[in-house]
Image 1 (cartoon, one colour):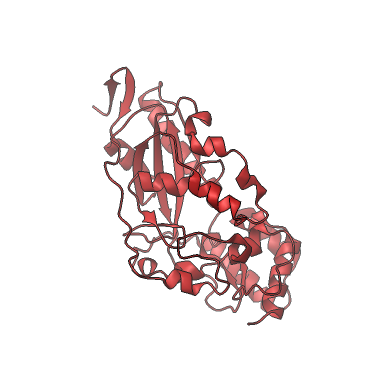
Image 2: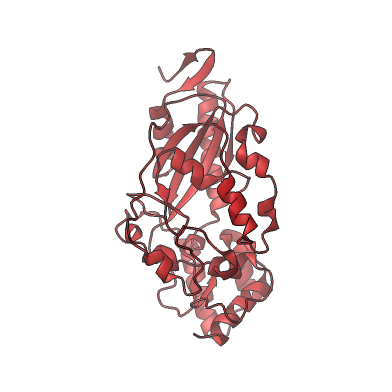
Length: 314
């Protein structure tokens, strides 16, 4: 019996959840009981000013600490992983775009998959209530993925998994039912390796796994709405950055995803070629924005990023 009454609470077997997750092409899934979170690590990071201009990180700390303030009925949080570890579209270009952005916008893709799962669960039991999130609400995604025994915090602060490395998107569902929760957490398997730390040309990654966004290429090419400081080496990245991910041994031996999202990759390859040939126009950028996460920045910012990469060689 997949769904039953359990101490007057709805219960769904984790095997049911896993089956639905795999049907939606998620590579892994885990569940944890909702509880308060110790956010002292977040407060310390904010106090150091490492969030740079991202003042929104100072907001809604109470929601990050207590998910029930976000979703009052939530008893369970389920974390889903979707791998984006595949072939790059920028191998023939000097300019680089983060590999996660060489796909359709994950916000919509993952939210759609999670809503499909919720619809199926509701068809099995109309008393089920759940809401999906992915990088769109004050939910501490990596923390909860760890609680769900999906991986560990790498030295570059990202979630690292044994099978899929750290090139994974994280989506969550907050639900009113109970299930079979993770009984342990994955141990940290980075050992004495510092390749991700050493890979950052601007020393944005500290030895304790904190990221100083003021020095981070991803922040500078996306979240910083102004001009990138001349002392920041972007290593020819014009949107996001993969340097610490590419350096990670766990990504080098990770299972590759078979889903390539070729439509976006072809667009990116075409855009990079046009930039190189000085034929790139706003219409090309707008086509890319319609499909990819690059819609987070404006055309003018993209041009600034390109100019910085061309005029600030290190």
